[in-house]
Amino acid sequence: MYGCDCDGVKREPLDRGRDGEALRGTLVAVERVTGSRPATCPWRSFYEPIVKDVLSVAWAIDPANLAVALGPDPDAKTVQAIGIYRLAKLATTRDEETLRAEEREQERRAKAALSKSRGSRG
Image 1 (cartoon, rainbow, N blue to C red):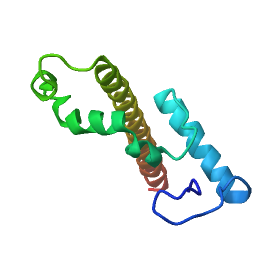
Image 2: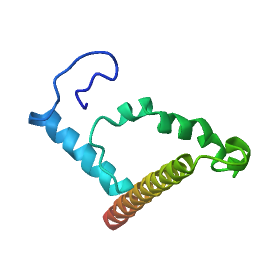
Image 3: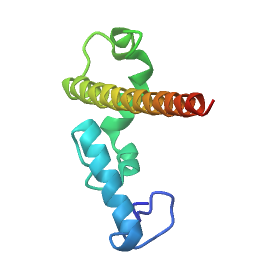
């Protein structure tokens, strides 16, 4: 979607037409949810050493085992990056939960309206 070469295939950036609109829409959504808009393909970040460090201990964030995973004197940059990762993950999860709740409410209203219209026919 980003027109990048993360998968080893060289492409031109997709910045115009329908593909460009989809890309811009995705970037706007990412920024709305996480507070940060990727400047390049987000997959590119997986090549960054700090991202590798964070992901290597991400399994320990939720059960609060970071002290075990990081050791007694963790690098401050890694600790800060873990915090940023955690905030983005929480924001994304919260947004997904909100969307699901809205979908359930729409389904409930649609069923209620259908039930009401069936009842008025009888």
